Each structure stands twice: as structure tokens, then as C-alpha cells.
Length: 208
Image 1 (cartoon, rainbow, N blue to C red):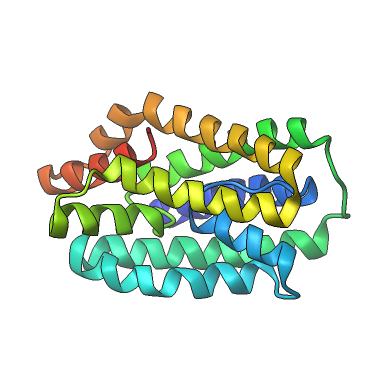
Image 2: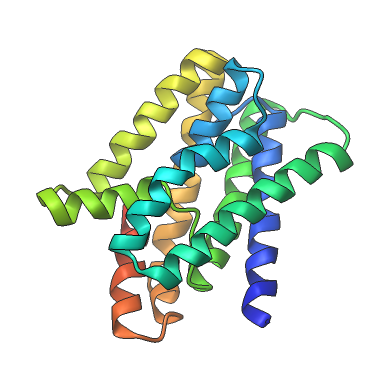
């Protein structure tokens, strides 16, 4: 029960960070950033896009990270989707200065993501893809994640413009820095050796 409550708290924090980024027309890396970028271009909500984009990664996660991690990830993504939708209804629309929104939003998302990893789950997406490509083709996970985030930011440049696209890089850097700083603590919170190896691998893809 405690684990579910902690996961919900982490998802709520992450959702609020994404809400700040969206209000400032800023994107970030990963599938959340991709969903944000596309939501600026198409009349489809972030919540729906975030869910749809993550479906293929659930399948990869099941085979590469195991059933338990996949279920936790599905639950985390579902909660972020739900909380993002509720926040868009409950909170009034507002916008921070883009650079400020990028810094604060990235910091808050970093906190939420750390809580999720320490709880044995994640928001899936690029991290699962990175691990899969590393195992199948020996591709460097950090570089794979960097390429994915670069593609997301390039889409962001098109969807939010050059200046906000550059500000978006700040949010990606802040999240990566925070994940790198707490990498060992995150791994140590996962008690089994197998879990430590898996979670450390995922966190390392966030640290490049």
C-alpha cells in the first residue's frame, strides 16, 4: 500500500512539472516530451498522446525488464496521464516565462522521476528502448537515449519555435543532472541484485 501511495505522489509531482512546461510552451525529453511536442501540433490532448506513445514500449519492457517492472511502469504512466488530465481541469491556465518554466518544470519532473525510480518503476519510453537496443545490438544506452531526446527536441523546435526549443534543452539537462546525482541511491533502494542492475541501467540512460 505504501508503495502505491509513493508512486501516486511521484506521478502527481511529475504531472505538475509537465503542466508547468505545457503552460510555458516548453518540451522535455522522453515520451513525455514527445507527447507534449505533438500536442502543440495536433488537436489531441497530452494525456491521450502520452498513453498511445507508450504502448509499444510496454511490450519491450515486458520482455526486457520483467513483468513486475512493466506493471509498475504501466501504472505510473496511467497515473501521470490521469493526473495531467485532472490538473488541466482543476488548475487555471497560466504561463511562466519560458526559461523560468523550463527550470522549475524540469526540476519538479526530476524530483517526480527520482521518486518513481526509487519506488521500482519509471515512465518507460526511451529508457526501455535504450536497454533493448543495447542488449540486441550492443548500442550504447546513453547515446541511444540522447538521440531519442534530440529527435524530441527537434520536433519541439518545430512545434514551439527556436527560442522555446532551446529553453527546452535546459529542462532536459536539469532532469538528466538530477538523475545522475541520485543514481546510486536509486539503485540501492532496489533490494535484489537483478533489480539493481536493471534500474541502474535505466538511470544511466538519463545521465548523458
